[in-house]
Image (cartoon, rainbow, N blue to C red):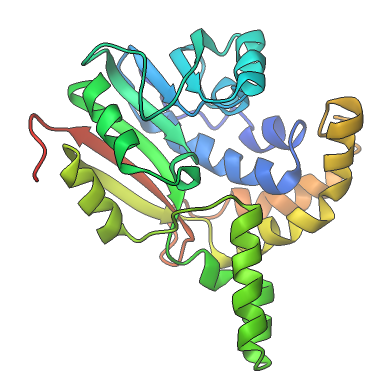
Length: 272
């Protein structure tokens, strides 16, 4: 299944009309990356969530979506994003060896405390030569938070440290690591890194960071009406769209980017 570049599709609009803007703009940026990556079937989406991202990023349903939580799995099944949707753990996947030719995992691995068993299982279910495509926040993420930087500049180092810890907790991050750390993990579990790049500038991160606070009405809407955005019309989201557009149109690779995108390939034997 080949995903080709297509800028006719407005990934920004397709995301912000259904998601809080801070999440929508990040997902829109990531969706663009997949358009030039060839994903050979069968494809596993590891940590598929409710299937919203895959429904936007890919033209056709992926083969299997796997997630440990019942409610998102049910939503993903209702969307028809996958030919098969399963509830299961990434550390004990219910698949035979070498079941998939490609695995994607979009902004998932940073949320898993015990990561190595998941990478080992991913290698097990992936065919030799198959691609493992994923993205994660990197080592610049916490240091680039705008509120923490302000506290640093005013000499409130302790408060800045506490704020970074707080933001990491609400983001449910266990791993914000550099390339060398990820390369070591991947090498030890039988992968080689083909390509990687950093994206989402510190300026873009500030939009995401403040969106966690300005986006609280969306959270209430989700609780009360089961929808993040009550009025998904262009006139209602015109300002939001305008604010997010410059981030969406940033140069894809950012030298100081706070997220990293990886394309790895399974090799025959891990380098232990």
